[in-house]
Length: 180
Image 1: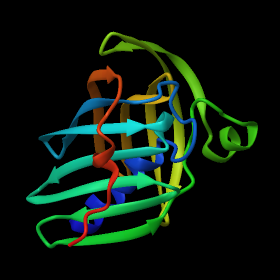
Image 2: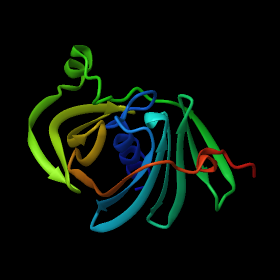
Image 3: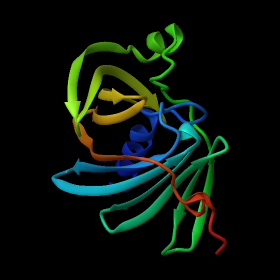
Image 4: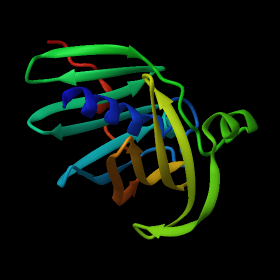
């Protein structure tokens, strides 16, 4: 079960880009609700430098962790175990800069529009492969920000939706790696 949760968490990250200019907003935060196996999980994500830095605190099935992305690296921070796992950044989809190569590789198709949290979004479908798994995803994007994602990986489905977006400065300390 933990392996499935880990793969799904990676796939959720894969539907968004990591790196420079992934959002059309310099800094802010957004709150999401995720339905995972009937359990609703609420997270808040803070970002800066147009998404080059991003931090999300998560609580899933009794596990608390923080995911920090910056400088092309992902850090998984487990405060309970006082550990930091460093991983290279993954190639992901930047919806502000969809190239023909990215569209073909991920079989991306624009299929419509919808409004989420008061923002008009473009809806895309994609097939994303990570860690030897392929998932079918439907995402709704506003200003580069994935406002809603639905992922189906061989019958295991998850949906995440932004319920609130705030634009404006965020505390730089949020992006510091803890020293345990």
